[in-house]
Image (cartoon, rainbow, N blue to C red; front, side, top):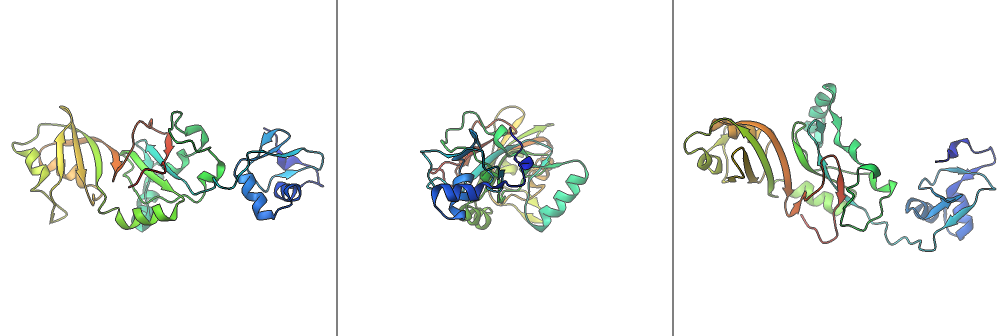
Length: 262
């Protein structure tokens, strides 16, 4: 890839050249560039501020359109050991986890980690990794679905309804469950001094439990399992509302499709 930062002194911003070429405003030119429609000497450049020399060839794809610049939502399969949270409480937790070596899950988002078999036809652009918000915190030791969005409507939906959206988790456990323990997991336990509402809990296999619950609190599932003689070895969130993690490999992400609703 060429280094456009070393362009000569008479170089100008790419957005200026495109605006002149298309006889459009500078802001419109920037949208074409960020949309991945502009090439410099045959190489697609998505940075409006890139410096280009007068002799460099600027081309705009004949398929160029601004219709596909809608905000996107990314569904990440967070591996254990990465921090994903929101708000003051999460910020304190993030600071503590980073001090112990945890990296932000946001750092996993980029073109190289895009799921190869993503069913969405969206073209991956640099602009898709800017201005992302997360309203689906997940404990650092846990893995699974984390949502990052640029869409204000989806951000508001998650921010307002995360407590009422059912979340599904697969929990790997060790130990011997107490007699009647599964029934107590479904209903009959308390957490932080308050009785828990009915929860859907079932065995997936001999060492894995499936939890489907609303309003999950940090530490709730480990405390519930401990109360019936089990020790949590791993937690993986596989669904939020009606949106599943699906077959996204760990450490990769896919686009939320238009028809998918939380």
